[in-house]
Image 1 (spheres, one colour):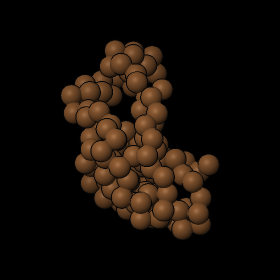
Image 2 (spheres, one colour):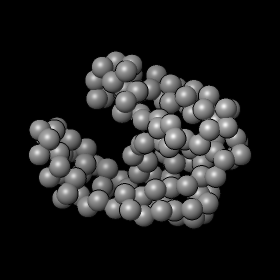
Image 3 (tube, helix red, strand yellow):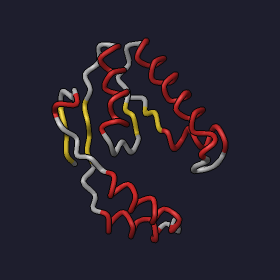
Amino acid sequence: IPVVSADQLRLLIHGKRYAAEQEPKVWWGRDIMLKALMEKGLDVVVDQTNITRKRREPLVKLAEEYGFKAVAVVLKTDVETCKARAVETDQEDLLPVIEEFAEQFEPVTEDEGFEEIIYV
């Protein structure tokens, strides 16, 4: 199953883990890739940190538009484990991002349009 990763697209587009001014290109590229794969009838995995309903909504709508089943896979990793992994991999710059994402996180709910929610 093809995997579309915003993080991988960032590296391909501008060679950095994040550059705010390049984000529109990243999201445009992601959407083009998803649509191209879906038009071929291929299932696809979106590898992305979708912490809010607002960020998940366009993906659910895209799945519906192309007749696909939207499935959410929620990785239940606690904040301290995420921080420890960032430190272990010399990515301390991610620590404030991890905190910010944890504060913004909105649990996935069935009323968002997912046909299935899987917790790992």
